[in-house]
Length: 425
Image (cartoon, rainbow, N blue to C red; front, side, top):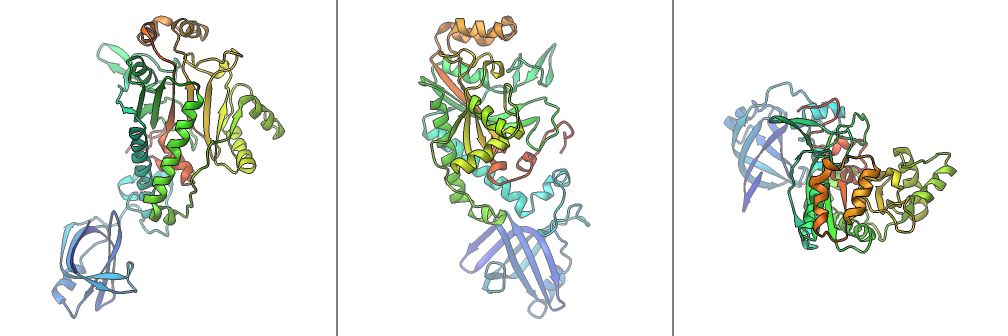
């Protein structure tokens, strides 16, 4: 943390590097904003010079001094110290090499997350993520959405499947929420019309891939009185434009550090039906049954980039066989649903749909999917007392950041990843 009044400076941070040249010590100090050079002369202050020789790398220090212009220094100026205090000494050796020119494995970076975040490129990811999250809140707040915070302990699996984490809830079994889906829809029944939530969701899926997490941050929205699921698509487009503008404005340093150039996406995003996707992928020698797998998403992403010069596209008109019981079916073809996925650089980041709001139809679809109506009565009861047409979406926050920054693994955009193999730190 840097404070300045006139030419007087107080700097609190970490001693990144100490170079003792005999009569001069060059001390690089890092805080959350950047690095600064502190220059000590043995001739000018022998006592302070002797004290500074004992500073260990990554120790927390406090520096009081004067600003001095120096074009050779990292910022074009340096600090000539009058007083230095070692606030906390760091043990040596440091278990993670923090030299910006030395790469460490992702596993080791996560093992020592409190240290890896001191590296500029690692911290840059989470500074961008902070902007993305703040941008989302700002966008939905300005767009008339109410922010909600739903329970993450539920009595029944949201998707009606087995990929849930059971928890002991007094004398019965509960589950960690896979999605705030039912509660978002409850708010539509309550008349809130437009809501959003940013919070953790949990998926007990034993995947060991660069795109899966057992816990991730989901950006969820729900909107009433929509005319079609295209209203939800338009909202997602506008949210992403807002994110891009905010990151471009607020994270120039981080983007430059990572060698990333971003361009505000053009709308509307291309739309490809599942039937069209199947034909396109067939030309690549790939067969599609009910859904597009990760390889297919990458192929389609490349196709859209080449044909439409877009990093984004909507995959629409999913078959009923690949849909959830609460998805609305198309009037003209009951084998298709008003569900879509938003694909970003070949990776699905959003699932969205128009929901079935008619009680009798919803109950019939629930039974058709082979689910027990009794177990979902807490949810289906909403629809007995008047629910407007509505739809919504769920988006992975970490996946947005991963794709925007061209990261190889979603865990790189996750502060504390939870995977089948990792429960710490």
